[in-house]
Amino acid sequence: MEVSRKMLADAGEHYALCQFTLHGFPAVKMPDNWTAYDLAIDPGNQLLRVSVKTRKNGPKFKPNAWFVFDDRKVCDWMVFLFVENDRSIRSWIIPFDVVLNHANVPGENRKDPWERDLSKKKLSSSPLSAYENNWGMSRDPAA
Image 1: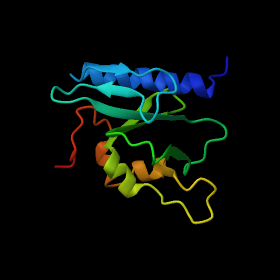
Image 2: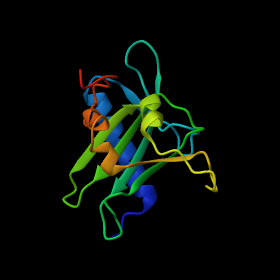
Image 3: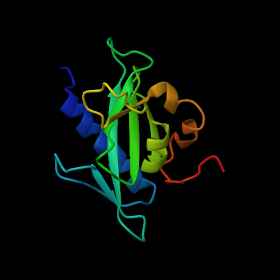
């Protein structure tokens, strides 16, 4: 059976939910189509809004493929999950402001100027590579 985009997105959200909870940050999944974020996390002092973006390797995947997000949908953290061919999962947990600073800025001819993107290649390179497996939610994991 082929995994649909919706199934992949749901699986990514549930994976992130489990990882946060197992790392000591109780989390809940928001209802489907909730605006701006997918999970709410309680680190102990305030609720944090988290958006989860999931991609997978496959026949149409290109190394510079993008994770796309809407910069109008403000959250506190973003989780980028990439499912490899062997079904292993790479994850980057990054503060939203850091994501905005490193995401591509849309050109003036872009149909949807709020649509931003970040490549797997950029996530795998410094400084964003320091956020890989950052389930402890360190704002500065390189320190």
